[in-house]
Image 1 (cartoon, rainbow, N blue to C red):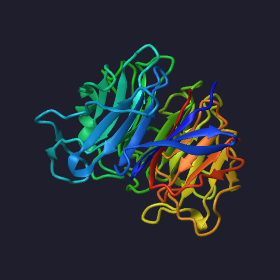
Image 2 (cartoon, rainbow, N blue to C red; image 1 turned 45 degrees about the vertical axis):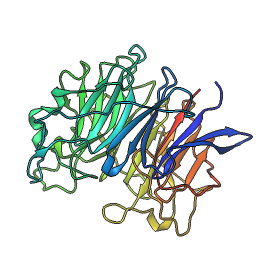
Image 3 (cartoon, rainbow, N blue to C red; image 1 turned 30 degrees about the vertical axis):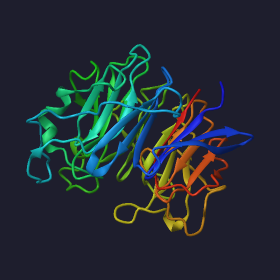
Image 4 (cartoon, rainbow, N blue to C red; image 1 turned 180 degrees about the vertical axis):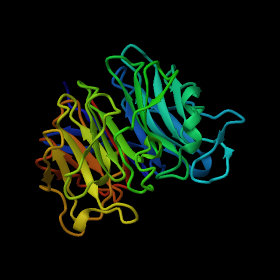
Length: 369
């Protein structure tokens, strides 16, 4: 396998990094000055996608078939006339409009052209033509419990994580802030809640274990063992070994159980990484020391990785999509809200900082060649 590229989505453009002679360098840029919220490198055909969040001008979706050298605009998900957002936290109903494409994933290997997009305000959309058109998944949008969902990071619910089972692409799992984790076994025709076992410290005692109020920050699955799932939750880390619904708290993450990002090794479901922080209104590294927490034994113990990371006056926050592991499982990257970008070639034992001052980073993704 040739060296991968690293695609970095930032507040002021998309940066494409290439690896050579033991270091990463910025090879090219795109959309400089524009807010790039997310990117996807489709492993099936090599297409790259970039989500632009342009404020007054809305969300735009761009596709590249030459590794980010040129781009063409696609369609974006759209709600139908009459679609309304009703939430469980007292906000009045209002017309549903696209606020953000918060997740974007490729379909199965047997589904060329299929993409899935999760949005704020909580709609899941499917495209079967590389993003040329989109259809909302009505079964989830119109689920009877939907009126009880509410916002976490945004005013309205949002789907930020989509996991497609590589054994059967009809099996989907999505995580919602705030509405727990949902599973479909029929490509979105029906859904069931699978957040049982999680708890929400921020809710009254009689509601804290309600799966529909769980503020999941990020959901990831092991590529080779897709029933092994990891969740970074608002008040902890949870793990499932049976595809969800059997969540167990992992309570000894150091130096904090709060964070947004999580990554799992593509072949070893016991090996996962987190970027801890102080929670709620603070949201910066504990004691101003930027670290990565790593477990090799399914959460029984953790290493706190510091080598190469700033240990004084560091106030970097890492967003949900700001941590990634490549297809080998050895190479990692993460980027922060202050524009720091760090990479590791040895599963996090040592980190190197990119010698560049980037804009605030929303997301990083490896594009394996």
